[in-house]
Length: 480
Image (tube, rainbow, N blue to C red; front, side, top):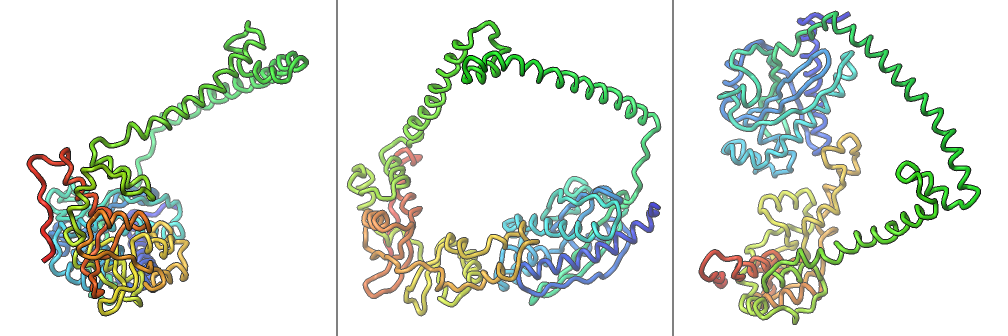
């Protein structure tokens, strides 16, 4: 028996409360932390009753439901919740999340906005699991959009809610330890609880009449299906007695050239079969590199460096060699480099990389360089099941990869260059020994910075006439 609208609203509120508990458990499992959710209140109201709680900066995940509840509803997080949940998903350090909760702007929130989509997907997954078990005739949920900012001015355009629209409002408080609790909730327009309009009786007639053509079409399809094999068998038998090879050709092309001799057909088909694919395949393979090769002497040098790891440096053209010999490592290095200790975990190193926007981390103690960790090293160490799309298959061993120590994944020994080394020698060392970066270390063993292949490419491109708008590019000032 179908539920009344009041009963459906009550059941939905209970299941969404359970959904928030499951959602909290999923986050706790993913990031190995304590997460809890508690329902505060259930009310009926409009945007006016909501915007005082969520004010000018909030995050909204819109969800489309199919089934007994049918339409779009919204999951909302206040400013603290926005920075807490999104920051947790991108594994920001606790101090960064705390700082953003106090002083974070809309622009800073949007920088980690992609994480909000992952948050919404996880919530949708929790919804599906709870409603599938508890509500009969449940269809499915799908995330239909995300919004970061002030959703209340022009709310109809931003999140699809009018100022006067009546909603069932569920308020929750969530805590991601060790941070302070934050407010979140669900906004359910009353219209999604209304039963769908019944179809007019007149619509049933076309359905019945549609069955007759379908049956006739099936019969029409079956008739030639019975005749075709008989004709094919008879046709195939004649050439089969003469030459087996001609049989396959005759069967494939009788409709195109019924009067042509079998031997001519076979010859005509074999010739393009042998020549055409070879020409189509070989021609682009030979021409593509020549067409894609960049123009200009400096650009050609970069192209050669990026496509040949064992390239001997003497073949560089005079312009590129002059530039590389005129600039030192100290002039282009990133300084100071980011550091981590050998016993820091992969999770901690990931946070340091994000904090410093760095692709490489120096590993050592008291400034003594022991190794280096790159983003690719981290990707190789972490389990792919830590990605949110694989959450239901994730196990304790996958989470354990976050605790791998830096000393187990770092590259060593580390090849270094002196501050006064020219970029020509830096490139030469990279091509001889491999690698895309080199720490800059003086004769006393002090690390001053790091030079990457991208720093070198920038120097070459800035020195190229076709890369400048006007005038000459000045060199970077020497290290003081």
